[in-house]
Amino acid sequence: MSGAIASIIDDLEHRGRLKGTDIANIADVSAATVSRWRTGKAVPHPRTQLIIADLRYVVDRLSDLYTPDETRVWLHARNALLDGERAIDLIHQNRTEEVLSAIERLDAGAFI
Image 1: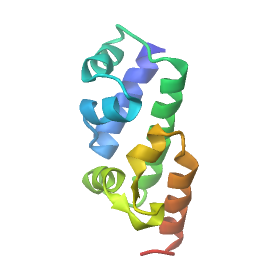
Image 2: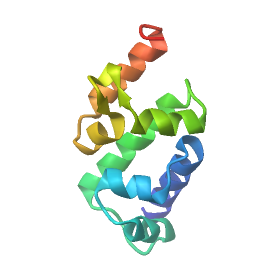
Image 3: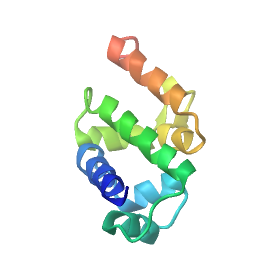
């Protein structure tokens, strides 16, 4: 499991330009905890694993539309498609479906 989590974190950093502190903030843990996940010294709790998996899926979908730097900005910025909320906050609140719905609208060209 720890190898899988490390791989996901690496993917988030590469494809979404997310830093360990970004992942820590979204998962509501310390940056040191994310570092321990990366090195296999710890494993996230099941709820946190879901948040990380959702974040990875969102980043994967955004990578079809944006560069890694643009993806990071999109995740952190308030967004009209999300009623002025930030995607990272919604993911943390287990409201990922709202984020994915906004991405689908972007992909369909509804708000370009």
